[in-house]
Image (spheres, helix red, strand yellow):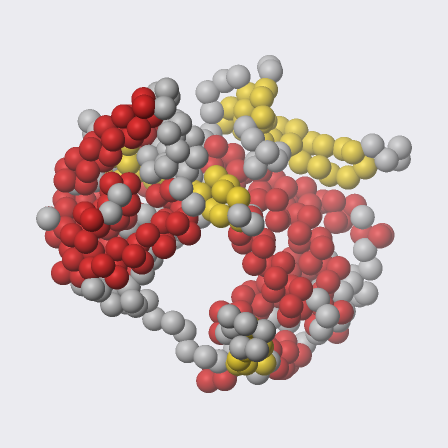
Length: 407
C-alpha cells in the first residue's frame, strides 16, 4: 500500500491510501554496518490519535533501546546534561517548536553550566532545593531602550518553576530507564514561594468591558473585528483562531472545528496540532457570531477575486493575503487586540488571553466544570467527548448564553 508524507512538521507519521490509516516509523538505532534501523507499524484512527500512539510507541521502544545499550550507559556516571540530550532525542520531536525553544533557553541559562554537570546518582532532594533557592535569588540584567538603560532583578517565578519541571521530567525518565537504579530527587522537592515574585493574576473582563471592546472593534478592519468576536464567543486560544480555515466552519450546523494551531517562531509562522489532545474539538457558536463570519467570508471572497484568486475551504479565515493561503501571525492578533482595547478605554490589564478567562467565567453558572473544560479544550477531559459526531446540548447552551451576553 502506497503512502505519502503528511508534512515535515510530523516526522515519523505517513498517511496510507486508506481513510484514517497511518504508517508510524521510529528510529531504533544502527546495525553493525552503521545503517539506520527503523521500526514500522500501521495505526488506524485520527491524526491526533496517531501522534499520541507514535509518542507512546517511541517511548516504549526507547525503553528497550536504553536497555539494549545498557552496557554503553553507566547510570552511576550519567550527568544531568547527558540525560537531557537523551530526553531531547526521545521526546522533543513531538513537542511544539515554541516549547522546545523555551526549554533550550532554560537549559542553557540555568542548568547546563551548574547542576547540569552533576551526576544524577549524587543528587539529593536537599541539593535540588538548594539549587532552586539559589536560582530564585539569581540577579538578572534587563536591557532598556539603550545600552545605558539597564535594570536588575530576581529571576521570575515562572522561570524557576519551569526549571524545576525540566529537572523533574528528566529525573523521572532516568528512574524509569535505569530500572530504578537511579532515584528521582526532584519528586519530593518544594519551592519556597515566599522568596519568589508573586504570580501574575489574569483578571477576567466583565461583560460590559467585553461589549465595549466589541463596539470599539467596529472602527477597525473587518478581520480584526471578527477575530475579537470569535474569541469572545468561543474562548479559543489565539493560535487556534489564526489556524481556522473556512472548511472548519459549518454554517449549517452552526459549528466550528478546532484541530490545529499557528505558532510564531523566529519570525516564521508554523501550523501544528492543538496545544493538547483535548484541544481537538468542535464548538457550537451563536448565530450573531456566525453572521459576522458570513460577512467576513463575503469580504474575503471579493478580496480574493479582485486578485484573480478563488476563496476555497482551505483558505485561512483571517488571512490578510489575497490568496488566503497564509494565516495571520499570532503576535499581530495580540497587538491588534491591544489597539482595540485602548480605543474602548478598557483597562490595560485586560489582554487577549483575558477573553478566554471571560468565557470560562461567563459559562460557569450554566454548565458543569467538566463541560466547561470540554468547551475550552483543557486536557483533563476524557478524550471520547471530543470525537463524537454530535455537539452536546450543553455546548449549544453555552454558545447561546455567550451570544446573548455579547448582544
